[in-house]
Length: 273
Image 1 (cartoon, helix red, strand yellow):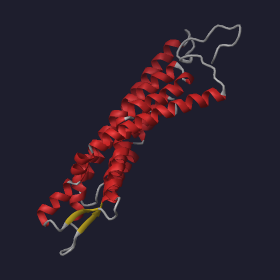
Image 2: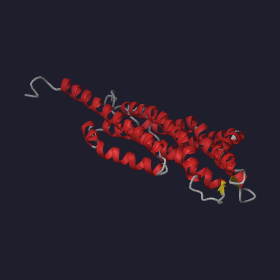
Image 3: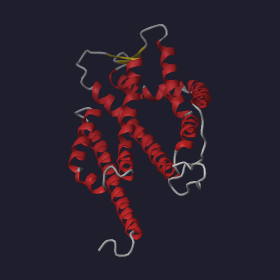
C-alpha cells in the first residue's frame, strides 16, 4: 500500500521498494529505453557468438563424424541444401547463443522495469526464484548436452543396410537446441512449485501427496524426450526430475513449518484456547 497525503509511509515487507509514480507516457518511454538497451546487448552477444560458431558446429556434429567413421564417409553427412543455408545456420546459432550471453543485461532491464512496483517481500522472493531457476535451467541444458549424442547414435542404428543419412543442417540444429531447452525448462518446474508454496497457493503436504503423479509424469516426459530404446538416458533424466520434485516438496514442508511457527508467535496469549 502506498502512503496517502497526511498518513505515514508504509514500512515493512509489504512496502514498495521505492515509491515512484509515473504516467502512462513515462512508462512507455521507460519501456522503450529498456528494450533498446536489451536489444543492443543481444546484438553484441550475437556478434561474439557468431565468431565462435565453428567450435559449436564442430561439437554438435560430433555424433555425425562418429557415424561416418564407423560406417564410411558417405553414410552420414550434414547437408546444406540451399545457397544460404550455411550462413542461416550460423545466424541461428549466433542468435541462440547471443540470448544466453546477453542474459545478464536483458534480465537486468526487465528487473529494473518491474522493480519499482514490487514490495520488499516480493523482491526477496523474486531474487530467490531467479537465483534457483537460472542454475537449474543451465544444469538441465547440460544434461541435454550429455543426452544428445546418445540419442543421435541410437537413431542412426535403425538405418537399414544400404541406407544413407543426410541430416538437414537446420533441422539437425533445431533438434539439438530444442532438446536442450525442453530439458532445461523441465529442471526449472520444481522451482515453480516452491514459488506457489511461498505464495500460499499450495502446501508442502499437498505437493508431497502428488509424488505418484510426479513420478509418472517425470517418467513419461523422459520417455518422450529420449528415444524409447535408450533406457539409460531415460532413467537418468527421470531420476533427476524425481529428485528435484522431492527437493521442492521438502523445501515447501520446511517453509510451511517456519510459517506455522511464526504465526504461532504472533497469536496473542489465549487466542488458541
